[in-house]
Image (cartoon, rainbow, N blue to C red; front, side, top):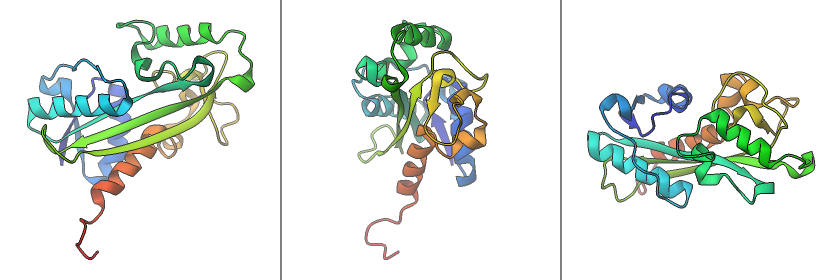
Length: 204
C-alpha cells in the first residue's frame, strides 16, 4: 500500500520505512509529493500527529501516516515535549536543540536526569477518516552530559536508553538494535497490531 508520510524528516522516513516495508507499506515523503508542512498548533503529540496526517491525506488523496514525537526531561518539567524539534527556535538545528538542552541541565546530577522519548503515530485512510488509528510508544532513559555517537538524529546523541547498552547513546546504536525497542518502534508495533486486527464480529 502506498502511504504518504507526513514529515520532511528523512531520518524518520528511513526508520519507519525499515519497520513498515515487511508489511507491504511503501512510504513517500510528503515533500516529494509537493506537500508543504502544516503548522503544528496542537498542545499534545496526538493532536499534532492527527493534524499532520489529515493535512497530507487531504492534499494527496492517499492514506497518510504521521508521527509526533519528542523528548520529555523530568528535571525540566517535561520540556521540551511537543516543542522538541524547535526547542531552540523555529529554525533550530538538531545541534542547536541539543546544546540548549545540555546548558539547561548543567549541574543536574545523573540521578535527576531521567527522560523519555515519547511517540504518537496516527494513520488516516483519508482526510475525513472518522476512525483514525492512533498508537503510543515510550522509551525510558536519561540525558548524558555530552553528545556521543554519530548516528541517529534529534536528541539521539545525548539520550542514554535503559537496557543493556552500557552507557551508549541512541546515536551509537545500530538500526537493528534501535528498531526493536525505540519509542517509534513500540508505537508502530501497536499501530500495526490495530491495523491488522480482524474486524469485530469477523469470528477470527
